[in-house]
Image (cartoon, rainbow, N blue to C red; front, side, top):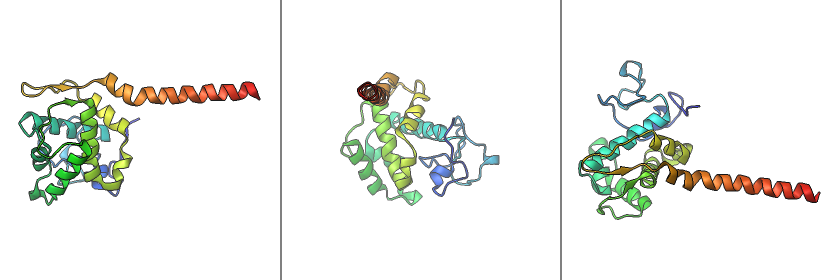
Length: 188
């Protein structure tokens, strides 16, 4: 089932299924609500949060590919002061979450990096409501990207790496639960 908050949330980014708060453009994003049906005149709306996250990630990857390959350059483009953003605070928050300096070149664009970058941006864009977007939601959106490499940038979407990080520990926890439950049943 798709996760959607469309027109039903107090936080604009979630209400629009656009957690990255992408401004309205003529870009034909997949899963985009047509302008004629959109209830927001300034920001994109999406059918569900996965499409909104995917669009955000594609936008960020495109900017990195075009040379916005530091947090300072990337966020200055993504959240400019002209849009009433505290761009300096935004840059510092994202750099801190990514554990890089604002001017450090972003060279390894892979699934784990995209997950951390998305989470860092959601923390700023959504505030405390960022917790309503789970890592699994972001992971699903990353896997929806397909091949987004360009001549200027190689992007490695490793679905197995994401599975190892999140799914395998869950399987182990479930297995331990059933082993413990079985042991208790036998003892009783």
